[in-house]
Image: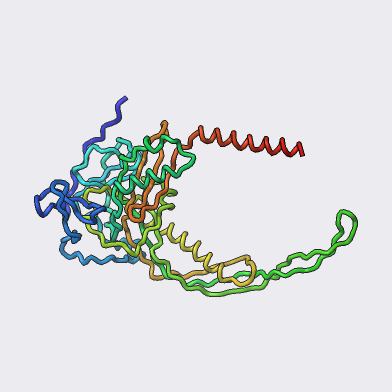
Length: 377
């Protein structure tokens, strides 16, 4: 049975910047992570890193007021370049890419069931991003080495995991800042010991030290600034894997310029600002409670209550580089994620039933030997 053919893509609307042309031959140039520059695919000419000549672009990473944005006074929208958006009917990821790339498979799950996606309102424009720093060849070598260190993986995995299907994708994140002023109260527990007399199994009196806890009220205040708390807005990449590679150095973000996206696929955020802000507040509140708990004196505590005031709440929409490998092994899909900036790797892989079988045999043999020699002695 043949796979479904994606319907024709919608005609995208023109925006401020269409393509990035080579200054030598005029062909299209794309962002090259190895060169850290725009490189012409035709003649190889490298363009300088000054990518965006859009009038009025002051190349400043802005923090937006969260309260104002949630009230509808939001920031800039659109991609500043001609882009096409499609939704995968299999994994539901929304991919954004150059109009020249038609009839492609989903970069997240490999499905060809792509349908045009039309926004009711244009997405927030990313404020900043981390450009791809690692090339595809570097990442392929790293993934093969990573596979080699997986003891339980099948020996044939390295050749069948199809690292040639590696895809580079910009993944959406929200970042949140907030200043908090918290007051807390709790009961502090102080350990002390008392000598207790008891009767042992032979009917003789014995003594032992027993730990007791003395409870006293305590209270305090805490001031803390949350800086760039990350909330992932992706649906196409496994969040557990992203958490493992999520060490993104946000201090090294560069202002968003459409040239960084030239030739690359971007995932449109599907966790909107409202949901992301709620999730961020939950995470920050939990961290704030931990910070207050660390201030409680004594050996232990109970009934901790925290009251916090939040101010200076701001947000950014950013893009982070991810190399993604999705492959099928004996009918089951697996995904490997590589941080395109730091090189951190996380992934899932099949387990070799042969290795597991012999490992179980070895354990059983060891148990039998222990029992056998134990009875002999």
